[in-house]
Amino acid sequence: MSERLPTREQALSLLRESGCPQNVIKHCEAVANLAVEIAKKCLDKGIKVNLELVEIGALLHDIGRSKTHSVHHAIVGAQIAKNYGFPESLIAIIKRHVGGGITAKEAEKLGWPKDVYTPQTLEEKIVAYADKLIEGSKRVPIEETIRKFSKELPPQAIARIKRLHREMQTLIGDCK
Image (cartoon, rainbow, N blue to C red; front, side, top):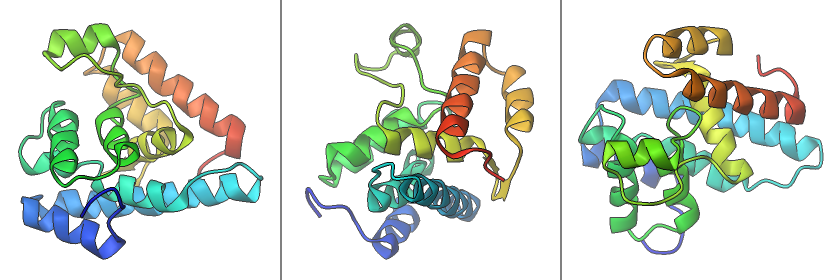
C-alpha cells in the first residue's frame, strides 16, 4: 500500500495483524463511527471535509497501541503508518490525536522528534475530538472525559481539550 488510503476492511485487518487487542479495535471502530457522523454534519453545513480520511484515520488512530499503551502510542502508530507508506495526511491524524494535542515543549520532554503534535486540519481535529467522546467503545459526555483527564494531565492540556470541544461545537453544535 502506498500513497493511497487503505479501505475500512484493510484498516481493520492492519489493526489485527499489528497485534491490537480486541478492545482497542472496538474502540477504534466506535471512534470511526462517531468521527464519520461529525464529518457528515460538517458536510451538511457546507464545510468541506475528507470523509474517507476521517474514517480511516479514526480506525487507525490507535494502531500504536499494538506496541504500547503509553502516550507514545501516537509516535509508534505514526511510524507504523509511515512504514506502510500511507499518506502524510493519515500519519498526521495518528500522531496528533492524543489529548487536545501535545505542544512542542511537551513533545521535547517526552523525547519525541521535533514535529507538530497538535491537530491542524479539520480531519485531524474531528478524529481527536471523537476520540475524546469515546471511552472504551461507548460514547461519553465531554465533561466526563475532562473530569477523567484532569486527574492525569496538566491544566494547559485540559484547556486544549476544552478548546477543541468549543471549536467542534461552533462547527456542528452538540455531539450527542
